Image 1 (cartoon, rainbow, N blue to C red):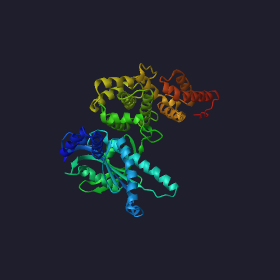
Image 2 (image 1 turned 90 degrees about the vertical axis):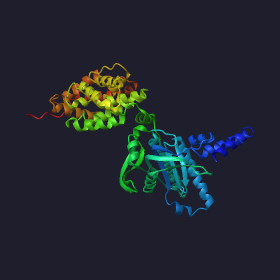
Image 3 (image 1 turned 90 degrees about the horizontal axis):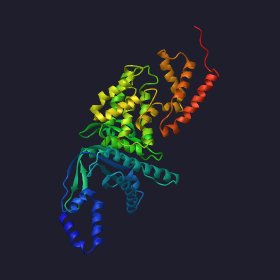
Image 4 (image 1 turned 180 degrees about the vertical axis):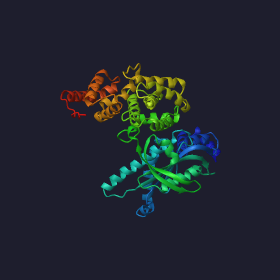
Length: 459
């Protein structure tokens, strides 16, 4: 059959180019590009094993009852409208439509064209499809019209894919990964996206999820499930679509030279376990704040790719030295980084950059390049934070317990001095943090001038 198709195209090549082009388009419409290429070259595509793909199933809730209220032709028109939109969204994220069976739509990412970021692309397609359906639902409800509700299931794992059939070729995917994806859809609530732990492990850094619990599956036993709610706030536009920061994260996780997200998880756990409990300011929360601020400033300042994550890595280690020593501990943080980072694929050159970034946070700050300016601004970005006074109180408490500060009045005098000595380096920090910093400085000065402090209790 394949040779017949190819020979027919050759026969019409010089006779009717329009017919040939229409026939070629038809083949590409029905089959994935990679397999269509093989057919048009006279080859029969063989089924291939894929070590990792992501399978998406959608299903219309109560479709049987809904179908009873429409004539067959009307039902086909409705399904065609929905599936055409699903195709449009899926193709945008490189998700291949496998087939439709009644009200069920099946797509696959990472197959037949292999790509490492397929779990993320499958979830992006699922989210956009579900959000489109929910928007339609609201519109139809407001007009008292009938609407549909959708359930979506996603699973990630190995599978076999290829073309079956002798006379009517069809692309299909087989394996337990497909069966479990279908099971995720079956056990999903309407309006939601249900995924397995296999998928969750790949997409967790990028999406807000809600753990559901275990469900039994054939041959696989209990499978942990999660609902995907949205792209993480810092990684999305207000519209809900992925922003440039999102794609930087995806690129690093799936195509980066070092394993940043694995490192981040392990080092954060290490710090949480080993940092002293009485670090009210310099605790794990401060590390997370600075890491997030460093990434945001870096992207706003035009830093891209690997360098964003070198800065963020340095931010994660910049106060690690507090585990062993309260003051002058930047060298200890840099030393810990040099010991831990090689096992995550960081090169000597990358570690050297990270160590310099950590040391640049030493007060007084004297950054020597753009990356050092970014991490310095991130470390003291809180000076312009709307919650500055609350944050400042935690640092006062930390210093007071160690005998470095006697009272709030002394602390405010030190803060005025520090504010006057400090300045932001990056345009973004000057725009976003400097106005708040200046306001807070005025408030501290007013407090000092008015002697607005609680009376000291006599000994």
